[in-house]
Image 1 (cartoon, helix red, strand yellow):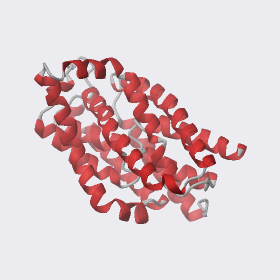
Image 2 (image 1 turned 90 degrees about the vertical axis):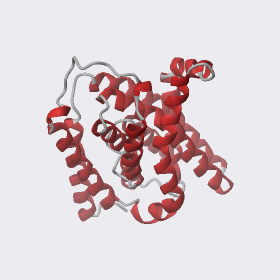
Image 3 (image 1 turned 90 degrees about the horizontal axis):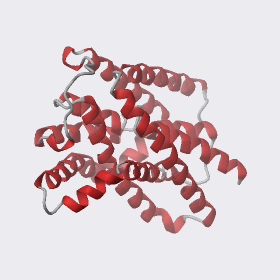
Length: 274
């Protein structure tokens, strides 16, 4: 049991740190679980469930904004419109997950797929950051989340749908989709955070309800421990990332993804993964 708790601590740290960074938390968790030989429950239940901690972190971090939106929902059209944009951006992922979710889990949740998805996403970040219109401008005018248009929300949703492939990164694909559609990098990043509330929350709830009858008390305790720990680490990562994107480009994440993907391919060839 102590061995499992240590593994949960490590995996929760991975989840919390990587969930909102554009590096694919699911990909890192699958590879981490394989390296740690964490088999206390059938994959990818643990990897999906502890994402609820990231949802909790977003809710706590943006609690004042969320409470204000609840109070203003009836009186302010801009607030209602913003949440319609969130719903629109979530729609492509939800439709594809319902249609192909089981097949994706059965065939794509493997280290080689994750490696190539990481590399492809890293190259995409480097290309986007080299485009003249995406050169970092610290003096760029701030844009409100309520300024997001229908076309921008749909572009984010279509890009985010690629994140059903492990290794692509939900946050990474939605940020790139937002930037390509005309959003500022901080605006696109924050919009990605809000999308996590319905998407990750819904995925976690669905996975838990469809598997809870097959779990014993010890497994439930490990899931809850992982969720609490990942919430703490994710909260810290949100604050750091918002400060980072205000002063830096995403190129560093592009190089990291390519390096991580190459290491995973090397590990696969060397038989590191069970």
